[in-house]
Amino acid sequence: MTRILFTLLLFMALLRPAWAVLDITVTQGLEGALPVAVVPFLRVAGSTPPPVDLAGVISSDLARSGRFKPYPFQDLPARPGRAEDIRFRDWRLLGSEYLVIGQIEAVGGNRYATRFRLFDVLKGVQLSGFQFVTPASGLRRTAHQISDIIYRELTGEPGAFNTRIAYVTEFSGTGNKRRYVLNVADSDGYNAFPVLESGEPLMSPAWSPDGSKLAYVSFEHKKTSIFIQDLARGSRQRLSAFPGINGAPAWSPDGSRMAMTLSKDGNPEIYIFHFASSRWQRLTHNAAIDTEAAWAPDGKSLVFTSDRGGTPQIYQMPVSGGRAHRLSFEGRYNTRASFSPDGKQLVLLHGDNGNFRIAVLSLETQDFRVLTDSRLDESPSFAPNGSMILYATVKGAANILGAVSVDGRVRQQLAVEKGGVREPAWSPFQ
Amino acid sequence: MNKWLKNSIAVASLLLLVACESTLGTKDDTAAAASAEKTAGTTSSTETAKAKALVGSAIYKGHPLDDPKGVLSSRVIYFDFDKSDIKKEFRDLIEAHARYLASNSSASVVLEGHADERGSREYNIGLGERRATTVRRQMVLLGAAEAQLQVLSYGEERPAVQGHDESAWQLNRRVEINYQSR
Image 1 (tube, rainbow over the protein chains, first blue to last red):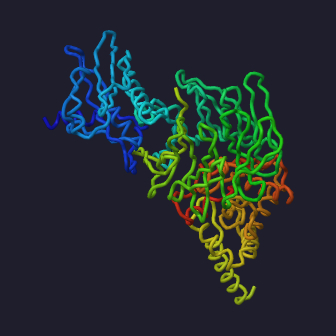
Image 2 (cartoon, chains in turn blue, green; image 1 turned 90 degrees about the vertical axis):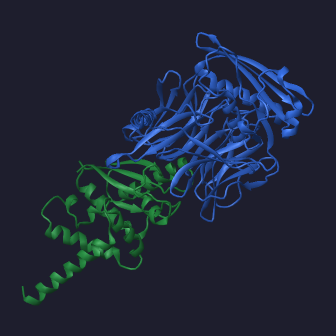
Image 3 (cartoon, rainbow over the protein chains, first blue to last red; image 1 turned 90 degrees about the horizontal axis):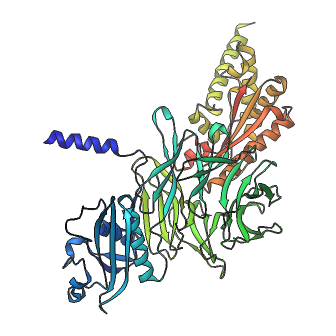
């Protein structure tokens, strides 16, 4: 028996990929997190059991947001699967304001029909209800879609559970032979897969607006190139391999152009490549470092990092070119800015007294807030719904990812089992 | 040669040897390089480097680039945070390599620019390039040809030393002179 168990464990260990899943934990949730009862979905009698515990995925989605407090399954007073089986009194006694129930049924062809309903317990009314038919392989996605519906219904904002994260991991391998892997995983860290592995550094992953492609920087052949890789097909094309730096790719919101940094003229300048006409447009003309361009959501301007004033700061410029004006004035080091989805704020990397932290600058009020208290943060970006900011940081000696809500009240930590993880990029809505 | 002179040369060589070991690091000897940064201000590394070059050429019979005691064996230049200006103690090292390139037209190097891990990655790529470009400009002024000097910035992607404090960072803010051909 022991032997079988051991063999099984060994087998599982072998199956576990080297690009192990991101382990996400909430390190700080909202004090007034909303209690929600998510009941394990009822399997229709005689039906093949689904490979995914949908209620489990939904519960952990809601908990991870820091805004909800789902009950452990064993604390639930009942397990209704159909609306007519609900006794609202049970749930009022539990203290839960909202209740989620569902049913799942195998419908042939390895597909499942999932029905779910969200109820307001106090009023005893249904707030939302949907039915999905999905292949077994898509059930986690269905669960995330249900989480998104619940989140939107209860917070008034779109959820970002059915999204993905790109990130770079580094392994120091034998003989000091480093290995770099560009990965993509679901927003909850599951379904991680390697997009590209290389013995040379991989940098700056950037999502296409439709979420189907990643642009990134690769040092293969001991020079920098920008590649665009199709995630479903795995095929890729080299977009740029000029002498010097080819870096910081950023897709325009409509996907028709790519901003990037090229140093072919002697020092780093911002360029825009127009896909339809294959035209290169130079934006900056400056002896300083100009880099890290990010598009405004309306596509009319870019922000970028420049040390033309002596220290690296954030500047904004129309995409047609022209004068750049400085946006950041707090301290001597502000870099890597990007817009919130509503365009009203910038998130950036702020250096102060030897600490490098994530800060938010309001473009309306000029209010400047530092959100983290670590010392080596970098690469911040907004979730597509604007609720959280994902960034890379160092904890102890380990390179991990962190996420913080814009109000600083919710915090998460994302780590991989082996190696360091960095350069996170949250996908757009899919 | 009288006995006294012989002895003093032996002592002087020994002293130089010790000084070389503690003040100028090679790419593979990062610990020595660390102390180079710390002691650079107190010892006269300029004179040490010149003396070293002399000692090297006087005694060593192999290729000057292989002479472990020659100034050409030092191939890393270190920088301050967010800075790309060349510190005084590295001028002789740069000059020696520039002279070597000038008199060996088939020789070529890649100047590899690096930054420490602090701050943003793409800005650090720019910073690493600026450091390498500064070294290239100096070498061209000192007689090397542009075609002999290639610049490549790794930013913070390829640290020489792992670690999250100044003892690692000071060794990672660097330009490495990597000979492709001699």
